[in-house]
Amino acid sequence: MTALRGRRRPARLPDAPMPSPLRCLAVFLFAAVAATTWPTAARAQDARELTVDERGRYATALADAATLIRDRQFDAATTRLDALLVQRPREAQARFLRAVVDAEQGRTDDAVRRFRELVADFPELPEPWNNLAVIQAQQGDYDAARFSLESAIQAAPDWSIARENLGDIYARLAAANYERAARTDRANK
Image 1 (cartoon, rainbow, N blue to C red):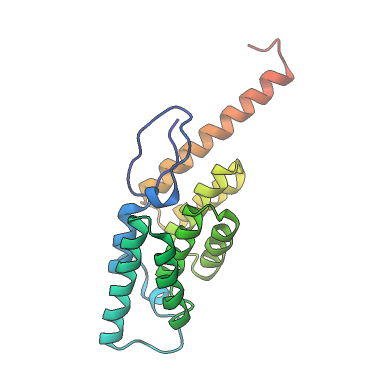
Image 2: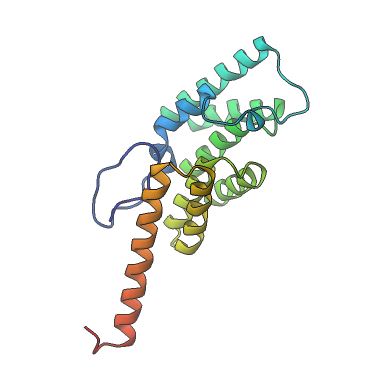
């Protein structure tokens, strides 16, 4: 059984602890900053459209925040992302990265809240659903993780990472049910 993952494949170890959302999405962070995987509606939900120059500065600031996260400079990344979110509070990429920082710093409740808010506003984005599922699975809530991964797959049917993670969740659910059955009926081999 593998650990749930983002874009980069972790080592396959039986019952390995779940990787952190940051390590799961190291490759994604840079793709998100490039703004090629997010729908236009997710990039421009704030009241005023950015000029070309402002858009460039904003993208650079997002890239800087992603680099700070990659370098595990979470306080600096938080400061940068919070400043960006003051400018554009509905901007999906900054919100996503902010939730990743919360998860990396062990602020699981804040990360879950941020991911839930993000998927409520942008259900078409599969990455927040996937990260939410990783946290839910880490907490042992496999039914919620299954729902989140099914939502990610609905948003991006060809995204193999979510499909693989869903397979891992089904395997964990099956193992838990087999264990429960074994405890209930010890004569059943």
